[in-house]
Length: 151
Image (cartoon, rainbow, N blue to C red):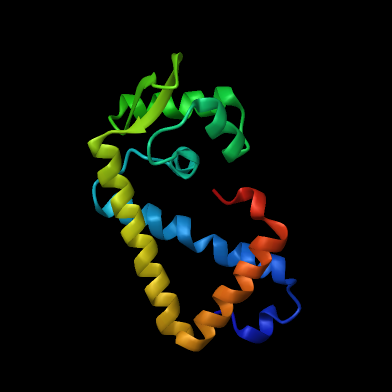
């Protein structure tokens, strides 16, 4: 089992990256347990990049840092499974918006619950004060180095 001393020389960015790997694992398990076993981790790019009122595939691809073609294939796959639909963009009738279906919204709710449960588990593990300090430190890092990734 890994002990804190084993990680003493790890750079902070690597520690953050390792901790970041937990959330997708937790979401994958929760989705599988809820019967959403036809969604892959790659599909997560779509849901991460999708605005609540829908998004264009080109915008989603930029946010996910993947090609438009790859995003289009992921969206088509999810559309065929009933998680997404494409509707006319009210701002431009020639364009389409990708939106969640009821099935997609239900799946996203499962993922959000899993994230909230993980947040609560981390808070229970660290304690409220340490969690507050961690949140403040991570927020500072995001503002300083990753603000362009926040929507």
